[in-house]
Length: 130
Image (cartoon, rainbow, N blue to C red):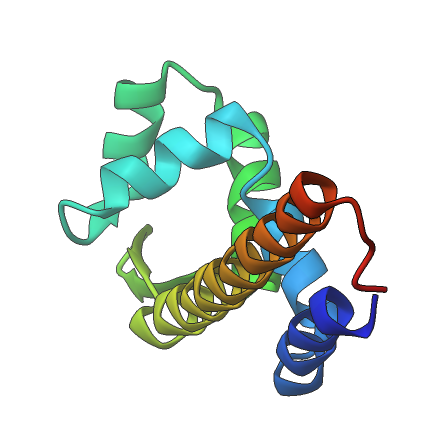
């Protein structure tokens, strides 16, 4: 049983789990995902986000604060308008974590495949390897 748990421990050792929870919480809302999708096209003025998402200022502010607190979004003020953009460093952080999970899952799957073969051979020849 130590095999499958080892890759998961390695992934956890390389990341700040509390940080990831904050990031995934920020991405766990449909409106915030729509905002991120809109920001994938580049920096957006708050007025454009309100119009596109049919969201009022207070609702949009709530979601933008969640995204900013997680570090997913940065802002800059230009006169009376605030412009938002995605934080490339945070996106890279998410991408690295997802890549690590994907690699570890592939290793676990490969190990499981071998265990299944050993079990099936044992069943085929009437003996147990473990």
